[in-house]
Image (cartoon, rainbow, N blue to C red; front, side, top):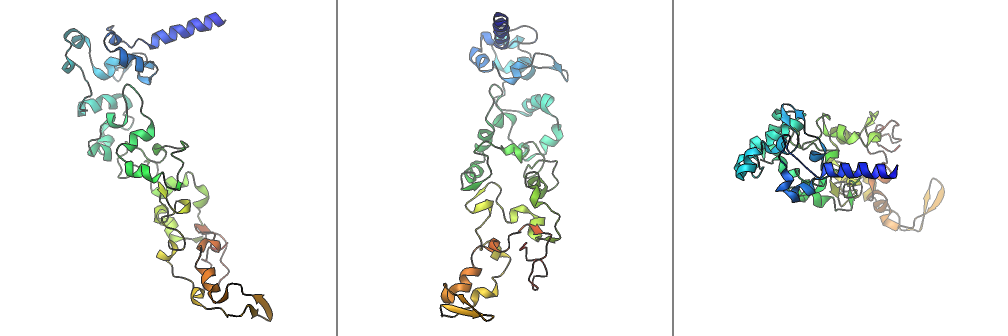
Length: 297
């Protein structure tokens, strides 16, 4: 049984190590280094066969190689050196699940970013490396203290973006708006809630930076400065406490360890210490002035 397994493995390795044209000419005779690098690459693991009237294999991408083999002229085959529209069409013939029309309307196509800028024909590119060559500023954001787990390889850029989509931000097209994309992982924040926080329903990026942030929880700014962009301080923050060490409230004496600045310290820290249900709540807040919208429980 062991000898039989070894024999099968040796035959499979020999087959994978010999990329050939569909009609016979062997590419590896001249391009041995490329052939060796493609031994286990997906294009060579697919046996030559007809797909949409075209061959899969070396000739499937580079065209008929017979004349090229006889003359040695690289102009007689498709080399993908400059990535012309005809070169892109060669890829779309097999990989065009969305069609050439949507690709032509995509941001990458309008910026003249061809398939080879992101994809390696003879060797696959690691997903993040394919993006960071052009989007180095975004990659840098993932190095900030709070970030989505892309550097940890728990997700990729394609988890949120479709590089072939005909949308400005290239978000996955099956999501009608940004929030819907976020809710695929953060379902607990979706609602609907009886008491809704308006900016949450409008756009997650009003408060969160999706790629990375210095502030915790991907916030665009730390509390309370983030909240103060829309809300004013509680009036209590400007009140002065008595200088006495003990304060009488309702007939009982309470310690006052923070002195005259006690109110300021209590109401100018993190808003979420009291307003914990920032994304929305089904229970009304207990304060009358907030009409239930205090997001406290």
